[in-house]
Length: 262
Length: 257
Ligand SMILES: Nc1ncnc2c1ncn2[C@@H]1O[C@H](COP(=O)(O)OP(=O)(O)OP(=O)(O)O)[C@@H](O)[C@H]1O
Ligand SMILES: [Mg+2]
Image 1 (cartoon, rainbow over the protein chains, first blue to last red):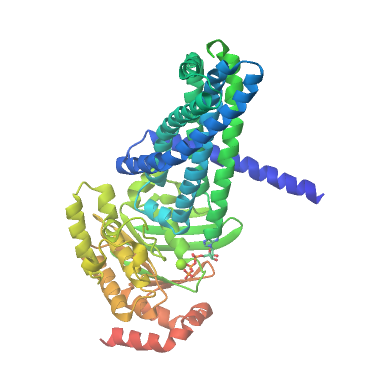
Image 2: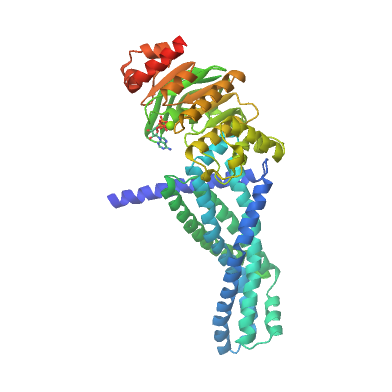
């Protein structure tokens, strides 16, 4: 049964890779709290990740918000419920759309960059050279990117949320013809603890996913330039899918745990 | 100082080294020779603890690197300088940052001071510092990169062991000579244990207190120049055959002069 054998091998690979990724993630978390701390490297990454991704997040936010508002407003108008637009927009953007879109954008832009960079350093023996100098490459290379992601993904998500709400507001007043006051008061009505909590918890979790997957794929890349290319693709695909899956589970769990606060 | 005992190593299923045993005492210089792919670079990687042997011990001052904690290994590596076969320069750092890497990472010296030491070191390896100091490695020629790599390995606070993986390959004769002189100078002045992997028989003879020949992952020779010349191991003779003429010449020079 060759098919069974292939499946068996695939399963084994999957299991061993999951295990490796898990231990690698543990190492990264431990390294987060150990000296030496590479402050200049971290600052550089904050700048590259944060400001570098800003335009992307702004563009994504404004068009996603407008698109959503457009779709909802015609639908709501049928029920004569146009005034509720702000509520729906606020919930869907802050709880789902903002975190997921931002994380996916950063996975595409940043995870690929991190994996390619670390992978290239690995193939050209730079990682080994670092180790030979008595330096821990996880602390020196992975942790600054990890910290930058932990800080920047939530920050960019908040920006994305805000821009999306603005985008939707444009649609609300110019196309749905509801007043600003009605729109914004509906939005603010949904800015309750539960929604904000979910909206900030998700990007933090997603930043961990992106950091673990991107760094792991970089450090484990093998087979020269081609291998780095493969690792980069896998890094984006794996982090994006994991983000979507984990997003679903967070929503699900949160719904059952803090429903009263939503 | 460094001692390998019955070291076996394989990459996955592929056996690379079998039963390697040799030692390097302090301020001794050993040259490792052998055909391409015989496992020379792998030996250096094992000594650095970049790979772990499946069997055997690798002792650094009587401590086994193979079973050491990562933290302890990091400390030991600070006393080891390594020149990688392909240079392995940090391509996002400028030349002076590369050369001063050890000092930048492990000391509190100011940038100016490190820059000054880097310039000095570049002069030492025969490079014109003014021209290249702020360049990125990719803008240097292969030979220049190699010399920067050597400078980087040498500019540490107190290396006790230096590992050179083919330091003179691809250099013009003058630079190769400089590099060899440099290796010798360091070894004798600072009493550093040195392991050099090289294919250049002339350099080998100039550098070595002892020779080790690796053939297909096995150690087939360990001894001095006379023993090497007179070795009747077929594998050693085969390896040396192409160099026979230059070998005789250089060996002669060394014995006579
Ligand atoms: N990362 C690796 N994965 C699998 N096999 C490897 C790896 N690195 C080296 N090898 C194999 O190990 C053997 C020894 O390689 P090594 O680099 O030590 O040779 P070498 O003696 O330094 O050769 P050269 O003189 O060409 O540098 C080779 O057969 C090589 O194919
Ligand atoms: Mg080699």
